[in-house]
Image (tube, rainbow, N blue to C red; front, side, top):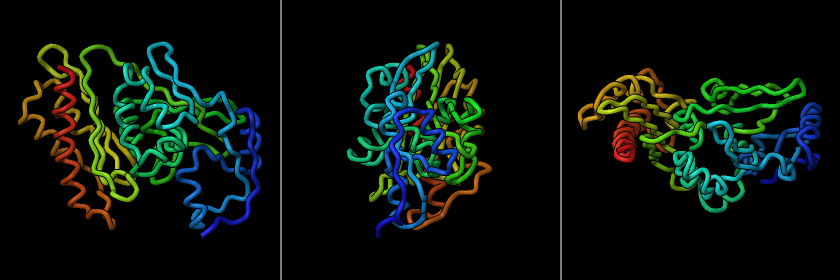
Length: 284
């Protein structure tokens, strides 16, 4: 199928883009999600504002103990950036697991996060990283914690006329281990289940455990039951297995053509245990 007719604009500044959004235009970043939806007539925008020519939206830089990543930075740029690999390896590892080469070269971090697909890879990592999303609109700018930003399936906290400007992720110090594990859909590369883990050991005990989960529920989330079960523990195999078994606690698991709810839950527990063990090994 082909999309319905629409007006196309290519703003050269963020202010110009926000003005167009205020007039009802829909932002277009890499187009890896929006264009297929338009072809299927699941999305029928009358006007697209292409953000690809706004140079101020594509960057990766370090500032005040965090990495700042512009909204139109591609997955490949995140995956291959020496700065991201050294300062935030969880995000680089996650980006390397997205889709295929074509998707990683065209898709953008801001577009992926704004789309809020419940099976997307970035949201799990951003949950584990306790990231913030900086949104800008006609009324100004605000920083939104990722857990508040992801409201529901394909639904975010963005207000009408707002656009993602950048993603902020913390830079961890020594002794932090990370890992991203996923079971991918063969055709699309989306996560049937994806687990992102960030662990820090303080002496013999685990001082910090963060676990982000995607693909299992209606939105990516923090597996706080798993985190609390491991923090303050030594991280023995038995403790890891027990904590991993809590990864789906209190969650309504998705069931679709790719996996039933019980099977998805089983996969989440298995890969949570693997991701926790690998992150712990890296921390040591």
